[in-house]
Length: 344
Ligand code: SF4
Image (tube, rainbow, N blue to C red; front, side, top):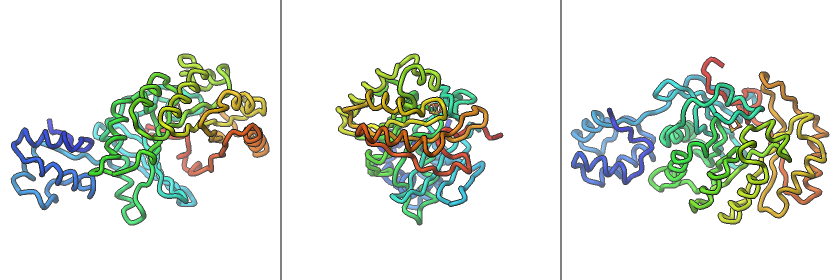
């Protein structure tokens, strides 16, 4: 079987080449082609000797994701791509052209096991974890597209999957993004979003990576949260919030609590007060997300006045609060609307 080079660290490529008795400086040249130029064809790596190019083509590969379908929002700010993995599975990745740069949302698993009631990504369960290379390939898909328009500026792991349920590959991906021979991206431009896997959040805090952590909270108490997010039965809200608080203290990074507002479920002023009481004193902010319609789930969006009232209640209690600007809901690329099925 050929060795997949995409997703390997420089030292691992060096090691692989050493098996072929190829000097280590060639590994640096390969990373230059593969990660800096986005080249996938060894034949076009013209500063490598012909024999090495032939050897690489025989023994190794660099897999690119192919585009199955693409959709663009009416305002052209959001583009969603359905991408095919080498084994035929499909994942979605989204580009959001923000005022502060190009932000992309990548998937970490095919499907998701978490079963959040407002989310389309979980409808078929989890199929498998993605490798670091497959997550990185989504970024490279956009880097190629955005070559002339600023490249990828920030990455959010909010596509399908629970990133912390695929901990090792996600960490590998994040570290690769930061390597100077790869994307040379600041950790501060990378956000991991989790449904609240408490032990993994604790572990992440110890990694010494100043990445942003976003917690999908979506409810002010255990009763509502367990209805919306089955994972809450395992890790109750108090544990999630206290572990997130420790993350903020250890890393110095502000936590974002994502809170999807659903009509008649979690959108009352008393819910805002309960939420504020739980997170008060933390280095944190709340991002309110008026729910996006997922037809299968029958969830409704609150009226604009209700959203405003909720926001004001939090602000009155000195909680930094934003309301997510809606991007791409006309192409079902907004949060909770990603799907892995090619048929949909
Ligand atoms: S919201 Fe995130 S964790 Fe929950 S089911 Fe969807 S993809 Fe999984």
